[in-house]
Length: 151
Image 1 (tube, rainbow, N blue to C red):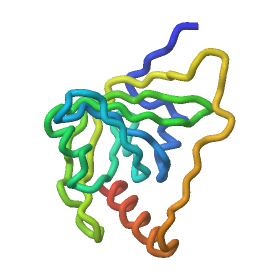
Image 2 (image 1 turned 120 degrees about the vertical axis):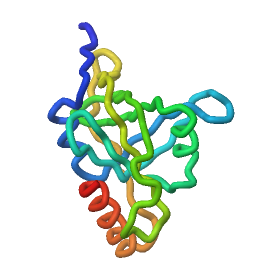
Image 3 (image 1 turned 180 degrees about the horizontal axis):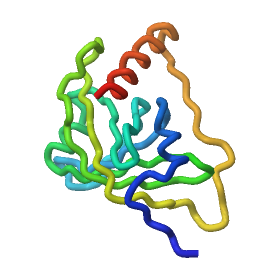
């Protein structure tokens, strides 16, 4: 079966990106020119053709995007694994109303591919838990996700 390539998020992926979740971000390393992969959880899709995420504004992700805007967001959802390619830009260098120095990154989606290997499906999506103070984590998560939704 041919791999269908979309130019925007399909509905189940858009819905999956309406809340915080585990994804990996691949950028081009500004020093080596090779791939760089990081995990993030503060991610949100304001529309089917854009994704926002928040990272420390001193992050290697930010430095990499400043040198080369090409990016891939790897999302496990809808019983599969998706590669969401696009061009990233720093929409906000420091998000207001959040106690950390976080940058808001915007990804203009150019391609969405189902990259799951043939004849399989994801039966359990990745789960994670915050390992610091639960109340502080919940408060910070709410602040960051609100900022992403209101950007």
